[in-house]
Image (cartoon, rainbow, N blue to C red; front, side):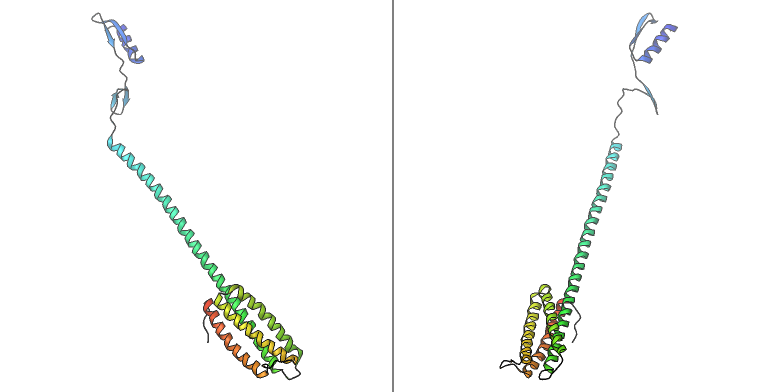
Amino acid sequence: MDDQGIVLLKEAGAHGRRQTVSGAISGRAVPLARVPCFAGPGGVAGLGEERPVDAGNATALGVAVVGVLGTLLSALLTQRAGERSRKREYERAEAAQERRAETQEALACYVAFNTAVRQYLAALTDQVHELGQDGPDSVQQRLTEARDHHRDAYAEVQLRAPERITGLAGDLSRELGVVYGMVRRIVSGAPRESDSVAAARERIDALWRQLRDVRREMRINSNAPQTP
């Protein structure tokens, strides 16, 4: 092969075109086909060659993708479950706090009512003791103030207490009003036939017992410790 043939072969390999080398070999034209090639790890291989896909690699890739997605989904579900759990815990704590606040408010209301009734009964007792005597005006003033204080405390019970407590407190308050009217009529010198100092004292003693019953129900309702 002369130098011209070598040059033609080189040009055919570089440009990938079919070339004809005339007179290079035995006086005949020799067709040269472009054979794309590249250098790979294993040597020279054809560029147009289709290499088979490795099934093992594809399976491993799919498993890896599924694993990543599963991890992300699991983390998301765990986060959502944690959020729901924290929300439920917060709602339970808030409800418990509201119940405690309501219990404390009811207890304060019951204490105020009990105190007001005791002061009212004490003022009635003092007023009865002063009947027929020229006692100071402060006794009557204290009775009026105790009556007004009791009225306010009873109004608070009507707003906050359950029906049973409200009913018992109402019965007690009405009886207090009856005794107050009796005492005021005696003091003013215009008693009714059934009005007397003895009757007033008897009714006052009954009211102290009635207050104990109301107080016991209030303790039960407010979960307060029981006392004799």
